[in-house]
Amino acid sequence: MSLYHDRGVVLRTYKLGEADRIVVLLTRGHGKVRAVAKGVRKTKSRFGGRLEPPCHVDLLVYEGRELDIVSQAETIDHFRTVRDDLDRLGRAVSMLEATDQLAQERQPNARLYDMLVGALCALAPQDAPLVVAGFFLKALALEGFGPHVEACVVCGSPGPLVSWAIEEGGLRCGPHRQGPVVSPEAVEVLQQILGGRLGNALNETRPPVVSEVDHLAIRALEHQLERRLRSVTAFHRT
Image (cartoon, rainbow, N blue to C red):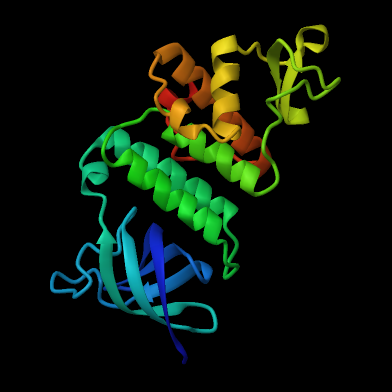
């Protein structure tokens, strides 16, 4: 078996046998990888807690036909502040699940990897409430499914944009209003996220605006995935 070196974020894990674990990672150079971490569930495992979501790790991996085998894992960032805070951890897990659904097996996607690492790093120092919504919308744009938020999806009018047409992938103006009503404040934040001003959007803390944008981003992502995100709690859906 050939040996390769890469960096990756642990998306999820599940048990294999009595002592092993299968680790699903998004790596920078090899895309989504499923690998066996042998003996990791033993108390004296040399991997310790390095292969737990959402750890960012430096890896040596043996390439297998179906499952790779982790030979070595060194921690780049264990995101301790995220793992120790239930609210932040919940947001991180939502991003990990979305990434798991969007990433393709063994298909490199360095931009998605960089976006995920960046989002986790943004979440670590403070519980920025719109990190998840920003990540969802930017990931959709990366995959070619970004919502149209600068003009009406029906007539191309710049607005005012007043409603969210999820099936058509964007906002509608007043004369073509259809779907849930969207506030001017939420429209501005959506335009910031998808218009290269994510930093401004992450400074938004008004609860009604945060909740509205969060809900719109979740709906947009789930519509494209054609499935509900299990990790998204009732809090996110309000």
